[in-house]
Image (cartoon, rainbow, N blue to C red; front, side):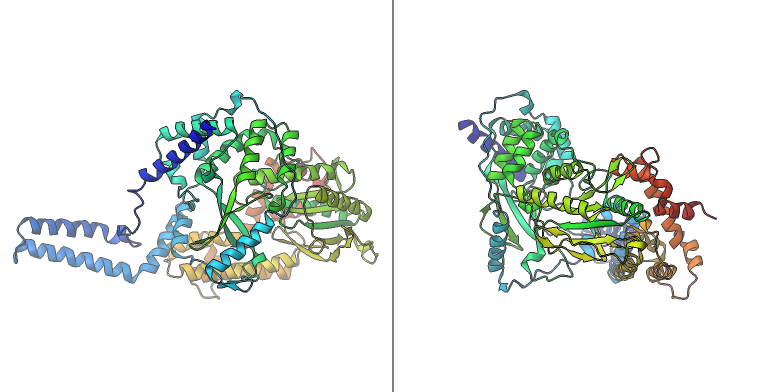
Length: 634
């Protein structure tokens, strides 16, 4: 017991030392001069010249006349004129500064300055669910999140005695590598430490932290300050009801030292947390567009021969409903060292959360289920928690086949889609999901889960049997939005193109509003920000010429708006002069880059669909034929 008290004291001393050591760098209420945009180009040298002339005049006894006084006045006038010029053209210079950072590929500095200058802080709603006043709203959120994080009945988890082993030792090198992985310019946690404290601290602090973390693993405890978490409610859908309490997700802000410790634990857990290839979320070199590609290609393959039945399942608050006891059992079954399971068990069973709104902070409450959204370990633990469901679905031996690879489901985080060429097979998969959800406290919502039938032309008039989830009939829809991409039952991409067209107009107007004062030479780099509006454009292959023509016109108009050119300006001339790819050239760039990513992907689901050594799907793929025509057709 005495050792544990000493460990907690050591931890607190490290925190206090880091805060005290940085006090002179982060003094509150500092009146330090913040230079305006364009200061270094237009005023810095004149300011230095003016200061030097003033010092010369002061050293000469501040004469009332003469050449020294005239020199001081002349340099002072030049400096003041430069300051006036900067203030008059502040918006233009600020926009130029941002564009130059983007032009020089200084992306991190670009986004930092953009957040400081162009993005206004989101106003907090005056009321939530009819409750007003900061204190009352914080209390309402506390009650809401407390119910969510304590809604699952969990039995007591007991590990028993754990003997000391050398694996518990944390080396200073591990601490250093963990600190290097941390991102800068992030909000402070409850302990008021930031990542910068760790990045710029003496290497001696790494040695002290390694001793501290070794003690935590040896005794299976963590200090109270490390277990404290601030929850900041973030709006889920900005177009939804801002005053509705269910339209907010809790983002956890933990202490910086706990994040360092999480990085160390994550490195030790990696060999035990591999999941099936059907899970695309939170994995390196996998992304949403690869998951959408796998879905569209699998359905397209079957539509050439047979009807496919798809079901998009909605797992309500899946991150928040993770059963801790069952999670730790899964870790044990995978052979995770007992000392790691013990520290995670202590962490999750003793953590306290508080809700923060502005400057108001609620009373703390305990947590009995869920993984923190925003935590370092949370994505890995959540993937592991769902992995057994993925294994069960693969073992069902029903669903879509690609070569000799069964592809009956795809998972991206908590988004789950089931695929089968037969309704009976899909119903079997639904029963497996319902059974797993009941066993592991995952709540699949039948009201938000939908079925989509990708029917062949010969099957369009057939009546398909209804499908059930937890004894409730699922709604059949003709289109669904999956990972931001609109998917239709006939695999037509017109709906998604129309949505991207509207997004392109909105993005162009936003850029024009924020960077309208930007000079012409630096307007060109800003155009690359428009490319994000063409999300999954490389996956379009079934569309009408009318719709793509509208998108092409929107693309050209967006650049005219940004370049401040009249609408009748020749698009070809504009793109050539500005060295910007045309609409079709940009699509070809997207296609080529995506094909390169497919060829480099190690995911077996992706390779089964794209690699000739795995299956012949690529030969008959409509998407690959479209890519070949666009890239190599003349």
